[in-house]
Image 1 (tube, rainbow, N blue to C red):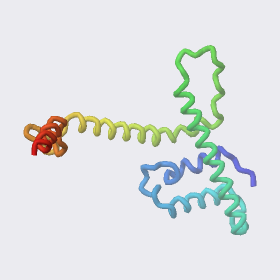
Image 2: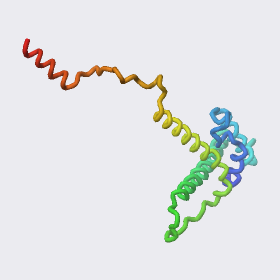
Image 3: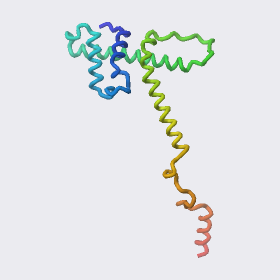
Image 4: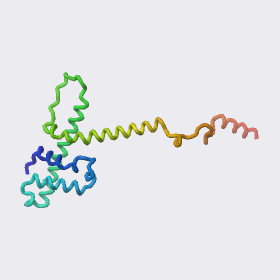
Length: 161
């Protein structure tokens, strides 16, 4: 079975349950498996005539093709982001052939990064300005561990006894 990578990408794009972590069904394995089965039916013209083993093999190949395309896109995106500005001396890397049709993945990766950044900033501000109820009263708090001066006084008392 010949697999057209562009067609796989388009079919996956039509099924956000496979790539959008914000989708409610993304967490449900059965929903994702059903989506992959639908893609297999679309891409394998003789799906009904395939044996169970052939279906599993075709499904495995299609999913591998998707993962390879997705991972290559993400690596290109990272290397593009890390490319120093004004680095004209280096030869520019050729853009991945499916780069443009995989841009729909940006919405999930950018949002995830923004959410974690917001959470991090929120936690940071909570650390900088703690509530009065969570702030311990240190005005008349005694330490449970004796200071060195207290130890000296105790040892002098013990030696005089």
